[in-house]
Length: 628
Image (cartoon, rainbow, N blue to C red; front, top):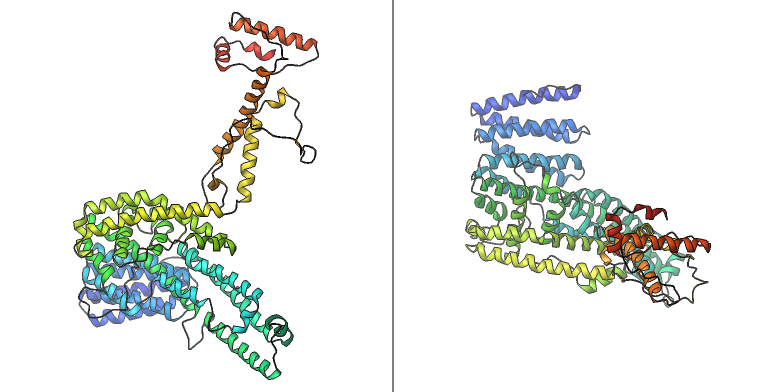
């Protein structure tokens, strides 16, 4: 296929160059000219590097497609050069790590989520285990990125700026509270929001800049002598001019350190912004290898590969049983239950439907959900084996603290997360049972005891589901009501009541006035239904509209029942007894009574009758009753 196509001149030139390099590369493969294939590969790497600096996405897509087709060609031909092309995957990611902003996020996402995934699928499709092993080895040694959950914790801790902020600043409670509020927002974004949607990195960057401006702004104010004495010093404190000069120098040093901690400098790369870029890359890579793990299970079920062998290499490459020492390098598989569960629930796009479109089709019409659930459970089983069985759900005291600190957004997030896991628990149990049934297949992953490991995983699901239900109920208890949902509840109940109520046709209705009618005593005319609180809190997505309709209806029915009861109990009301309770006799008596009432200047318009009599009226089609 030729790349020399399209209307854009630059695209045509690039397409022509890629065509020529592809032709040279393929010819070199056929001739076993390893030096030429290596030289061509280096040229292509150079072009891709230049394409990443361009704003035009078409350049990157053209280049990646060329690389993909060459990978496909070399893998099919089992040529040695396939190892160069695979190693190039980590070379690109190393550039992204070491040169912050060098590769735009949209290009990085395309490279990881599409190209890396596609090339790894090729390896698995051709059952090229040696190449797969080499790929994992390069990711562990050359790239060596940290786990997303570990990076999240490091960023959360860095935000405290313990070593950067002067101790004297903590003497102003008002300033510290505002800084803490902003820090809480950022820590929430890192732990939860960025776990749900990796692209929220942009929102974090914006709020990080606001945080930096706030801290530096407060430090700049401290350099003013009047401000420092009135806002920072305690009443009992005194400061001499020489000490004040030292304070100003200390503040200048703090400002510099804060900037370096957040933004970095040419000597210190490990800033918050740098870690954020690494977190973005790490999250994308780990999600991609999660999908690869699911794909391995699919190919294993199809009988195309030894799935257990591939999964063992993917998860344990740097930790073989006969390792001589503790190895710091890790594979691109995390065994953190919290991060894995967020990925399963939201898939980095904040959607519960992401499993239906994981960016890869599992050949033909095969679904992806079964394999993603199974791979998640195998990872959880491994997590439990490693002693990481805690989902990190807060205790009741922690929840109360969140409410006190006005962190309702965190309570709402925990509510949705707990509710989400509980909603998935039945499916997880079902998939776990399936794995247990065929546990012998996975013995090599769990030291020849897969059945016990998977049974523990099933127990973990049940236990965690109960914990989620407890957290959910506790949050329901303390969360404030959502004004919009309360207003909707009132509106719908009122609408339903007015639709069913006949009271205005029977009695003279007077609108309640709080001041005038404050002495009135109210009675319960019908049942008092309890409204589930989950209907009225923001994070709950349960539709309670049918409840509101029913509540309005039962109030209207209760009014009528109460009115009939009062009429039947009031001895002053004249009663007419009909001996032959046939429809015709009843109708004639109604006409007579209505006529008498009209003569007394009354206008009867409503008739109450038992349901069985009304049914008989309808059977005999006595509709003229309506015109009485």
